[in-house]
Image (cartoon, rainbow, N blue to C red; front, side, top):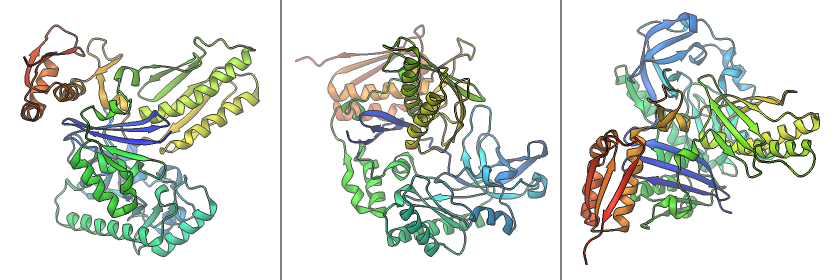
Length: 505
């Protein structure tokens, strides 16, 4: 089956689904008009040094100050750069593991100092955003690192001849300042195409420097691409057979982007214009309760239980309803092998990062433990995030880390539940309102000239009336529908109804 990349743009958010062999593999959501912050470059001002944490608070214009750790401050001296040049880095580098011990923060920064920084991780819970002075400007084929003069090849390019060819090409293209990383998409590309993209990245860097010279801290100097083009830059590859977009404006933006990097790719781009919602047309429904459920059932009858804390995510593997047909050891092995595949998929789908502990069902045979471990490693190869996995212990435990590329899906779409004192989570009114806006749009398309009455909790209708005003006017004009929004104060917050009155005659 083909791999599909679906991009659905609506009034309240942009949703992206990557489907592999007919199954949802990755899902992204970005609010409008509140784009993600990761990748943005700022001119910041150091507010306070925290020697005990080897960090500093930096004001960049967000709701609260961001963290800048000593290990993320640009180092001085040839020794640091020599360390980088000795090895090839991954497409998304785990830089901390390759550094020399950082100097004291007070030797690197002082209060009131202006610094050029990039946001590498957005705010999570009570933690502020994380910054770095090691800047990177990603393109489709290359990443330009203006402050680090290393050369690197994506770890997902495994052919040694191709790695050697790309490395020779990078040495030829390397600018006087900074370094380059060849991304996965660079595989098979000629130096002329890579050179054109490098020229654009260098022009972007000069533009950022000019803004930095004139701006007063705190100031945003560079904002990363909006969701649609950023996803195409990061995910769209020869492995994706079709890219389908349901918004004409986003379609034109993506088309122009593809023509600038590789005109041949535009022939895999399609504009979806049918009345049926895009995701529904391809048999995909975003069921939040199922997508975020703590328990995931396996085809065999076993199940996975996810429990996320502030420090780590624990995953428990259970045989559940699966009793097997032969020996107990065979039942356990089959369940663990199936669980290893599904865990790798769920980590991508839920975008779980940080420390992860997996409790596989105990296996007495070392050969079985090794087989499950290798299955987990093989299944994680599709993951664009960097992972580090330790072998299964004699207790059946796996300790692993997964790079945080962005907020987890649960953190993005849920909030602590008032009713349970924060022990669980419910969908936020904003998410419910945006879901409702999409359903209203679908109803208006299917039943033009009808009278639609929407009943929901007051917290949801308040957002609906505020953010849906433009949408309601457009639906009234295009489909001649009449819309009425009413409050249901005593209903559960996640409950809403849409009733329709069809035109007479």
